[in-house]
Each structure stands twice: as structure tokens, then as C-alpha cells.
Image 1: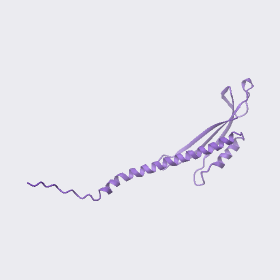
Image 2: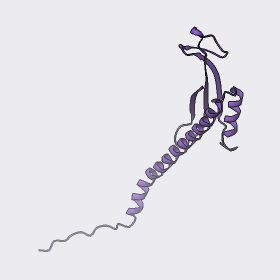
Image 3: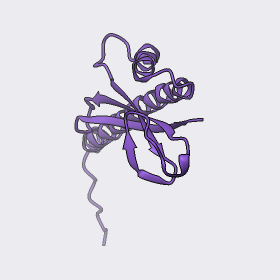
Image 4: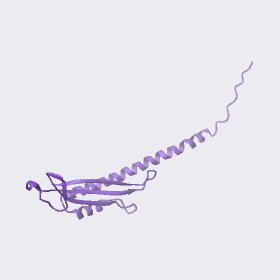
Length: 144
């Protein structure tokens, strides 16, 4: 008695079908990775500008000067939406940090007030696959 093994069907085209199933997943993975990388890059650019603004704020030049430095150092180019920069200067009593004022204040015991700057930047990020969001960074600087 002879056992017959049926011939397999043609396998031509199976690699194409497998690739058609896997390709969308691979494309989404690559685009997602690129999108996250671009968002991290944008955040690091904002951080660098904030560091430069903090260095200038240490010399206590005033809010307008710090904002001008932030805008001048920002290298986001003309083709992207500009970053909104803000710098606020305020005074704080060393014994009571909850009390703040834009103008110098008299502290208990005749202690000098501490001068602080709050610097922040908001840059819209449109995203490729990620939803559009605002990348926000901030820093606080104490003038010595």
C-alpha cells in the first residue's frame, strides 16, 4: 500500500501578506519614536533657554531684561510657533516665605528681603501622532 502525501499549495506571496500585516505596526512604531524624540528635543531647547535666562536673572537686571534675553536666546526659528516667555521678580521675607511682594518689604527683625525670579516658557507642540500640547518649563532663581 502506498501512502500519498498531498502536495502543499503554492507559497509564493506569503511573505507579501505577512509584510502587509506587520508593516502598519512598524510604521506606527517608527513615527511614535520620532514624535517622542522631537518632543524631548523641544523640551531640552526650552530648558537651555531657561538656564541662560537664569544666569542673567542672577545679576538682577529686571524683568524686561530677562524677557529680552529669553527671546534673543530662543532659537526656535521662523517656521515654528514662537515660545511665550515670562519673568516675574518678587521679594520674600526670609522668616515668612508665604509673604511676597513686587516691591521691597520690611521684614521682622530688620532682615533684608530675598529677591526671586520666576521664569517660565510655553511652546506649543503640534505632534505627529501625539496629541497637540503645550510644552511648559519653569525655573525659580534667587538673587544673591
